[in-house]
Length: 231
Image (cartoon, rainbow, N blue to C red; front, side):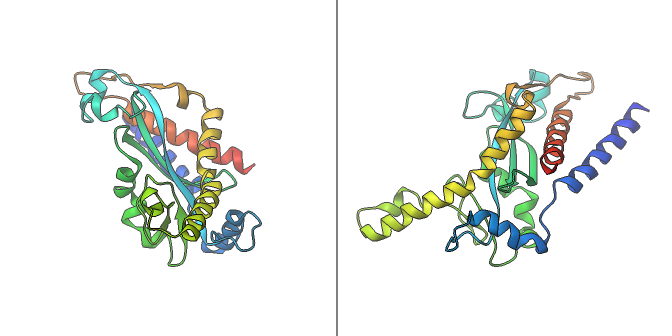
C-alpha cells in the first residue's frame, strides 16, 4: 500500500510540475521578448525566450546514500560541499519555464545541459530565430547566446570591436541575471534549499535511499515558487 501510494503521489507531482513549470506557448514569444528588451527599442535581445543557468542545492548524504550514485566525490561541488544541480530556464518575471533536477554536484552546467531533455529535443523547444541567454559556462549554439570571453579581446582586435563586445556583454549580463534572481527568490522562500537537505538511507538491506525524495522535494519547491509568483 505504501509503495502504491508513493508511486501515485510521484506521478501526480510529476504531472503537476509540467502543468505549472511549462515552456512558453508561441503566442507568448513576443511578450517575453519585450520583457528582455527592458524598454530598449534597439535591444538585440528581443527574440530571447529565457535565461538559463544552474544552481547547487546543498545535501548532507550519508555514505550509503551516495554509493549508488557514484560515491561522495560525484556530489562534491567546486564550492566544497555536497550538492545536486538544478538547471533551469527563467523569465524576467521570476517564473521558471524549464527545470532539470538532480545531477550530482561535481558536474558542470554544460554537462547537465548536454544530457537534458532540452538539449536532446531542442527543435521542439526553440524555433529558428529565437534563443536563450547564458553565461560563459555554456558553449555557444544557434539557440544559446553567451558572452564574449577573454580570447575575443586580444591585442589584434580593433578597439572599436572591443568596445562593442564589452557593451554586448554588459547588456547580456543585465538580462541573463534574471535566472539568478529567480534562484535567489526560490531559496529565500525555501531556506532548506540553501541550508542543506538531509539524505538518509531508507532501507540499507535493499540499498534504497531518499535521493529520489530529495529530487521530489526540490521539484515541489520549484512548482510552489511558480504558483506563488504567478499570484
